[in-house]
Image (tube, rainbow, N blue to C red):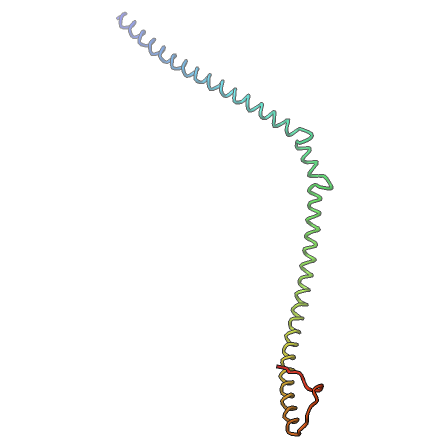
Length: 153
């Protein structure tokens, strides 16, 4: 019975030893992972420090950028003023173009009427020329060259 108990204890001790070995391997892996994480954290911290120095640099950092943006002669305010001025000019030009379009439409209408009147005058002139030629032929009137009408074809 003592032998069986001693065998049972040996078996339990083997199981415990095996579990301890597994835990030891796991702890070693975890230690390696923690070491890598600390190393990466250190690299990231140094990068953040560099970024902080860049952002705080008086010549190129955020303060310098804000100064450029707020500069009255070249900053955002100036750009907005210029955009407002251009917008105002665009509005004025749009109004001027509308007026010009109205005037152009009025002139086009007048020109069409003039063209129609001119065509009517040509037609009437041709008719009068025919009548006058007919009267001159029947009455035997000879027209001197300086009084002859130009061809209105």
